[in-house]
Amino acid sequence: MKKIYSNSVLILFLFLLQFACAQTEKNNTGWEQLDGILSNINPPTFQNKTFNIIDYGAIADGVTDCTIAFKNAIEDCSKNGGGKVVVPEGIFLTGAIHLKSNVNLYISENAVVKFSTDKNKYLPVVYTRWEGVECMNYSPLIYAYEQENIAVTGKGILDGQGSNQNWWSWKGKKDYGWGEGGPDQKFGRDKLFEMAENNIPPEERIFGDGHYLRPNFIQPYKCKNILIEGVTFKNSPMWFIHPVLCRNVYVLNVTIEGLGPNNDGCNPESSKDVLIKNCYFNTGDDCIAIKSGRNNDGRRVNVPSENIIIQNCKMKEGHGGVVIGSEISGSVRNVFAENCEMDSPNLERVLRIKTNSIRGGVIENVFMRNVKVGEVSEAVIKIDYFYEEGDVGEFTPTVKNIFVENLTSKKSSYAVWIKAYNRSPLQNIELKDCFFDNVEKENVLESVENLEIESVVINGKEFTFKKDKL
Image 1 (cartoon, rainbow, N blue to C red):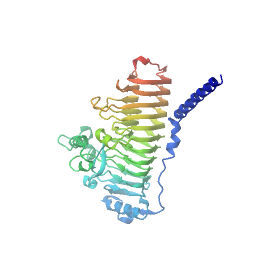
Image 2 (cartoon, rainbow, N blue to C red; image 1 turned 30 degrees about the vertical axis):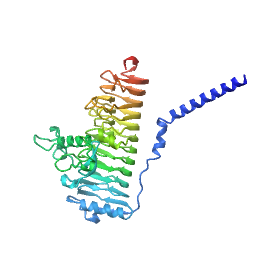
Image 3 (cartoon, helix red, strand yellow; image 1 turned 135 degrees about the vertical axis):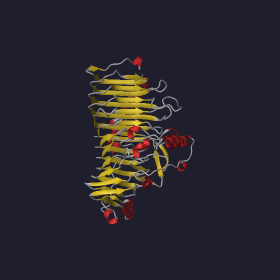
Image 4 (cartoon, one colour; image 1 turned 120 degrees about the vertical axis):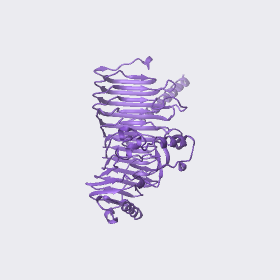
């Protein structure tokens, strides 16, 4: 009896230990991670030194080219241990600005930096990533490569001057000023993607002049400790804020206004520990789109985006509020979005995941809570495995662990729209305390595994479903 009793105690002990471990694991895989991730995201600090671009020959008339003045002030600041490069009140015209380590580019209130529409001002080409593919292309308007402790701050305006008269027409669409026989990005885009699939080294993928691949606004590339705070961005040629292969990125109190083609607001790509907080987005494409490289090139680099936090942001127009994909071949994990507001008949979706079997990748651990939605034109939650090319590739994507809590929406076409593959269903999605009003159409739920619903109301009725139909 003593032996049996001892064995029973041992079995009970092992069971309790296993249960405790499971509970600990569960408690460490949700919002409980947030504080730990936030503790790793800290803005850089700078020496108390100032370098005014006026002292380097800049003239605030909006006509004089101040590119050299910016360059010399930034280089002088960095060589002297860093500090603040000050853009004072006035209008300053410039070409590409390249940041250096320990430099805070400070745009004063009532200062406007206008970026030239002369394409030669963004040459020679630099090492960049364009739509998820590495290449040599036009410099982003503000660029940094392998730098540490960099910032763009202040209350001034950065104006990319994108319009139908210059950059935007390269999209090749008449809606953006393109005319028959005019410059068009299609040939260059197709060539870049073909080179990447054929494993041509990025250094040999040389574009720039004559290829019409528009640069992004600000792109830190392989940088650490980045702060973008307070400034207003307007009318980028393409994407606005695009950190690539970066670590510790802090985007705070930024306003983004641009309704041009591919005017994504903030696209962290293959980056880790990113905080986007108290920002306003009014964009011609996705407000925030988390990415990790496209197709073969994304798998070659093979660096995920992870630990991306979005707090207290407002989204007006755009294709989606919080978006993951479609350049997602390097995977994404640990995305947290909370306390956001979205509202516009021209905002299409709230939470969007877009991928396909050419992109591949794993998207996991996406958390959203406390979101107020006025209206969106399509689906509040949309997860699409059939984006663009659809299911024609050999790299089946995986999407799992999606949690949405305390979301209210006043108007949409769909509440939830999900189409996954039978061979790779969406795994584990939980909706809790969500209320959807004025929903026009029935939910779409194709190939969903482990859908959990708790206190979800659509058009005043509790949402129920039959598991055998998923």
